[in-house]
Length: 576
Image (cartoon, rainbow, N blue to C red; front, side, top):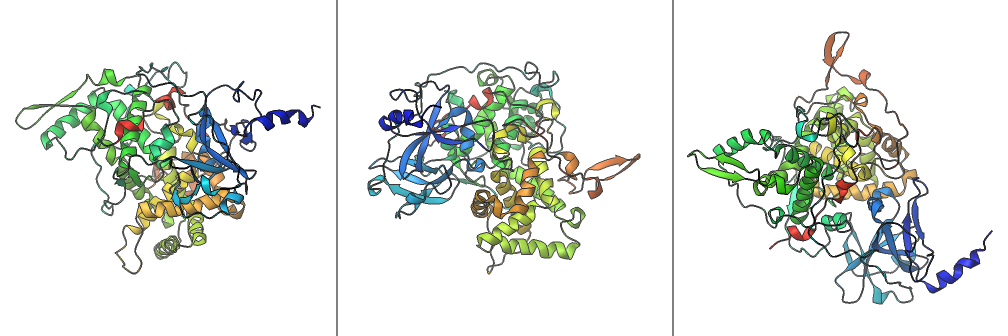
């Protein structure tokens, strides 16, 4: 056997750095120190691009961490591979590099050093900022390839090639997005849906673009991906101040749109955008930075075009001509249609609250009777408002173990949608990296969003009480996520939660009543020739099956690799 001493010359002459090693197995994939084949060429022999994500606080020193671009989604905390512990500030640089803990307890030496500065982590939590000049005695190894390796080439305008069609990928029948039927009762329509009478304008907040130099969701999610130049008409630097169409024109547009080439990519783009929010990828889906919102909407639309085998250059020539009440013509294109995406999350949350109200009832076993239902809801609200993490975790565990949680999870991410391939695909299939952790648990981002919606559904009907004010969604979400961060870091302390969280990625229609948000009643089934609503005797236990790595269990289709390659730079959406 070769002696380990033979490795020492390379270690002695090269600054240490770490890379993520994906073994194809959830339990053995980890961040490890790389011993290069050639000291002068540290990435020699490796295939693909490696992204610099920050520094590892490990072995009482700070060393660069590089991540394979193809596995970049595994940097998300939900995968429990690395833990973001703070930022490093170097001299007069405005850049703050992330610091990660790559092994349990590995960053204790740094966390014991007090600092008067703090910043907002990618997950919306306050964390320390350490000044390099104050870390005397701690070895620091500057990243040689701060822009990744190989370094990115200068951006040049390119035309994205059309991807393979779903038929070419042999995934489904010959039907494509453009001719698939649209017959589901809820698909986030173009006009704002009938508002929930209990909804408030504070459901979703678009925060103003006060500082476009700060780190944002768009930067976290997209800046490490190859960006492409986009048509000038897709630049979106400010929101429209008013609706430019009158009632007659809107009616004309509603008639024209379903028979136009815009129909499919708009519907599909809204689904992609809605899924991005539901899986909890933004720092706070309930308080979205305006720039990030515009970036996410445009990226979702371009990805929809890519899947629909269209390009914007083709679509932009198909302007919709609408008439006002005097017969004057107005051309409508992306500049108007994009504004309707801003209502998508409000529409989604309104629909899901109706499902929650139909699911958290004695019918599903949530409570024994109406009085018990009311007292249980008030008790859960008190737990969430307690400001004690243990009590908040008790409320989260109590809710995730209910049939009601499964109903809202199925409706939001796991039900088949006709607009997606073959009419069988689900929103979960669009975000395989965000559905479950490497250890197989339902992603805490999803849990956080849905628990927030349940809290919102519980509190909106209640009268205002100055002595016990209810928290807004954008306030309670980070509190819930903070509690979940602790739970996912220590699953052994929450067995009741994780027994269920392990099963939920395998959710199917046979496991739910399929509550209709319009009627708040279970789906109607035919039994022995008689129609009746489903009841709990019809609900089957979740069955866990073996699923391929990086694929959602029971996935109905697999995204082409080119899907995630369609992204644009945040600079196209910052203020003028």
